[in-house]
Image (cartoon, rainbow over all chains, first blue to last red; front, side, top):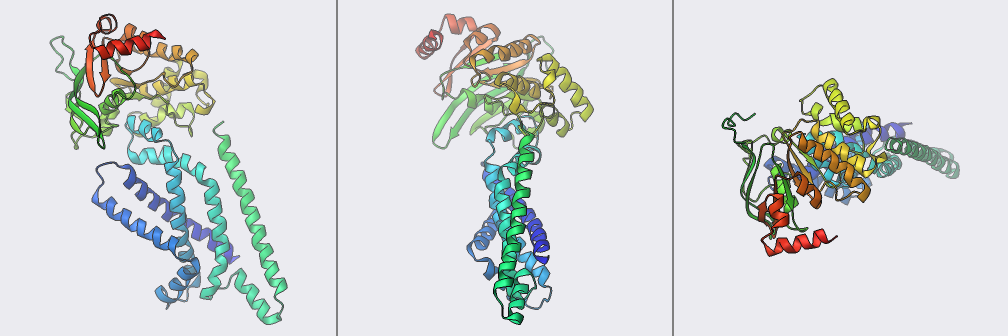
Length: 208
Length: 254
């Protein structure tokens, strides 16, 4: 059960972080000519963030968070959620960025030509269309995130994979617990995939 | 509206002074100056890549001029301190590829900008949208999504969307170029009605028949300059520049 709550909270952190980073990055790239200093600095920070997070393994990030940054904390749940959230934020930001870039520039032009601000056009016109386009990629991210929760056992947190290892340690029988949790992961992922398909079909319908 | 319009002479709604636009090393417009009076219909013609669309897009600053000034209603809109959104509220633009918002109904496409810019309440915007949709004969499409409309219907809605802001000036960027031939007429008809009502218009188009009939003044843009300008009679019946003669012989031969 904790695997699922970790996934949900981490995804929430990831999506919020991801949208913020994606908006900074596209704002920087789209505002031709006059880019303000604040945006420039933020853009550099965002670039470093995505480069570092995407360039190092999830397991290593967990170990650093658990034993270096939060070495004195016993709150494994918080550490796990933060690590996974920060990790997924980097990927989500790239997904959102590609989604925003996939929208015809004519949409922004039409919105701006009507006197609406950059922010309003983003919020009401660009992002709703982008979300529809990136739903499959976002679904994949959710599934990856869910399976990555199996890694949090390395910082000592008790979740599905840890439980299986504990059972093996007591019973000396590896097959049942490991095949059992594999089946559990599979079932949850299949349910998520099914929900994702349903959501996509529903969103597509509104355009017909 | 601008008060300095007392002596019967119409004031300039748009004035462009020594406009130069470069994309990298490529100079698209070279030191262009022109103006559009209130109520005037200006049609811009010229070969593709000549800079005529860029000229139009500089009028509402979708393209930022590299050099030169653009004035709207006497106000320098190229000044960085000008609230460009407030200025754009007074100019509508119609695009070659319609650029309707596919994630919203036709009704919402029309009401979004008036509401979001604080010019109208939801109810006022809805009433305005209803009135305008009736005008172009598309009242039954209010709840449809743009994907279900034909090209001609999309462009008529795009015109309505711009009109909902009650602009003083309408910019048309090749509004019929992406349409199937049988749908060109219905869009031009709406534009002609608009012209008859006295709307100030700047139209980039390849429809020479429309230019002849509607234009007060025709600008022939080629090689990044306004090579020739005059009344439709002067431009079409007595062209002077060899480039213009060549262009007309190609366009009118079809």
